[in-house]
Every structure is written in structure tokens, then in C-alpha cells.
Length: 368
Image (cartoon, rainbow, N blue to C red; front, side, top):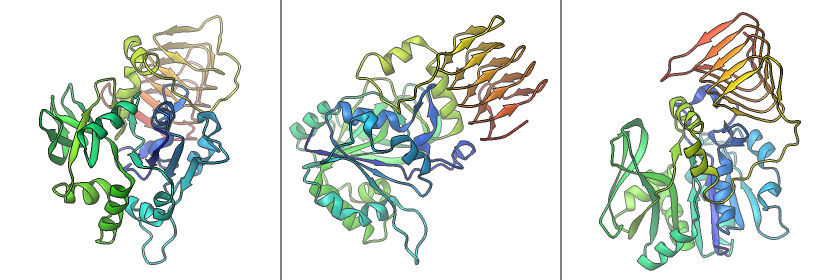
């Protein structure tokens, strides 16, 4: 895979998850107690042997730069190749964000990268996969483009791209839907193709007014290319909305799913932080929860995820909730079906409840 250029597109639609993406892109949403969403695709690329990775930055990129930095924690801080940031360039005539425009603006870097193939991915899909099998499938089928997909096990209401293929994987149809029925083949937003095909699509689509790589670059020209679908059968979840994020997070409290995601394949890397171990005080009660380093617990925590440096005071109760780094839940408060973004403070005697299938979201730095 050292002749594959990895590209991660962080210019993703956040319209259904704005409560926790006002100051960050989807890629840097905290996930699973210590990770960010971008850690999964970045680790998958590195574990597959891809050593040249470009990240298409969004307009709000501070959290991406703070988290990834030089790429050292993913072994991508190298003298040659390694990690590259591809920022959007300011255009006085058109200030809107467009992934095709950013790719077109950085086409020289992509074209002269010296790689034979391009693996393009978004960051909102959580999975653990070796891309070597995809490359072999791509070469054996003679595909111009290979799209990775999974088969949906339950009906879900969320924006998605549904594909249909023949038994040999040849794609016969591709469409954008707002509902995915059970048994549908859902694109994971990961495509593999030759560098020449990728550059040709970018130039052709952008110079004809295109803005979106999938809609304008692949859907409109699907008859021109030999496109195949590669089925992924491992654990996968997508985060397009608050409900998606809450469900995907809560699924990780099932030890079987945790094992599938983190233990059955290669490791998932993230930025290394040295923290003291979690402290469980005398009156602490914790059941079926993920507790990160630096937490201090004196109250009750049930079926919840606590990120680093969360403080739960005496008499406080946390149920079915996600508490992000730096939050403080004061004495005798009750938090149930709630997502607390970073540095939220819930004062004493406050009771906050969301619905089981629609959590209550408290934005970053809020004091209640």
C-alpha cells in the first residue's frame, strides 16, 4: 500500500449534528472515551501501510491541527512523505466551502505525489479495516473505481448513499437516500481508484461547476467508468446526526461490539496524553460504563461514557449519558440521556433528562 495516496476529506455535512460541531468539524468529535472520529480512518490507513496521507481541512480547522499536529502519534511525522494538510484557499469571488474546489486547488500536490492510487475517505464512519484486501479486489476486477460498502442490518433514517451491485460486485446503480432499509448496501464514503482517474474526475467535475465529489464526480459520470463495490462485513457505524452519535457511542458499552472494533483487528491510535488514573471515592458506584483517565467519581454512574478529567461529586447520578472532557457534575444532580460537550458545569441539585431515543445536548462551556 506504499504506492497509495490516502486522502481524508473533512469538509462534511454537519447540518444534523450542529449542537456539537459549532466549533469543530465532525472529524474531531470526541468518541469512545478517549478518541476522535478521525482517529479511525487515519489508523486504518496507517495500519494498511499507507505512508502518504493528505487531510482536506475545513474552514474551522483549529481542533484538527491541535489533535493531529505533525502526525507523530500515527507515525506520519517523516522527512519524506508522511502527513500533509490541504487547506481551502480564499476566493474573493466565492467564499463557500466545496470539497471539489479544495481538491482542484491542491491538484498539483495530488498529481505529483508519485503514488499510483488514491484512497479517498470521509471521517464520519467508525470501523477497523485493512485496505490491502480492497486493493487486491480493485486490481483483480480491473475496476476503474472501487467503492466500499456495508449491508444495513436495520432500517435507519439518515442521509446515506445506497448502491446496487451484481453478484461479481459490478455497480449497477447509486443513489442518495434519506432512509436506509434493512438489507440496503450503504456506501462507507471510501473510494479507491488510480491517480489518473482521480485527477481526471476532479478536473472534469470542477471545471463544469461541480462541488461534491460523490454527486458531481461519480454519480454523473458512472456510465463512463467501470465501478465495483467491495463489501465490508465487520462492525461499522456512521455519525451523521446527534442520534447517530448517541447510538454509536452507547453501542460501545456492549463488550462484544467493543471487542469487534478495538481488539479483533489492528490498534486504533490517538493523540497520547499522560493523565493520572481515574479515582473512585468511597461512595462511588459505577456500572457498565467507560471511565477515562483523570476522572474523579464520588457519585453514581450507570451505562455512561466519561471522557478525561470529568468530576462527579457526591450524590450526583449519571445515567445513559456521554460526558465529554473537563465537565463537572456537582452534588446531588441527576443527568439522564444527556450529551455534555466539553467543560460543561452542572451545578448542585439540577435535574436534566433527555428522551431515550433523542438525548438532551448541552453545548460546550455551558454552566447550568
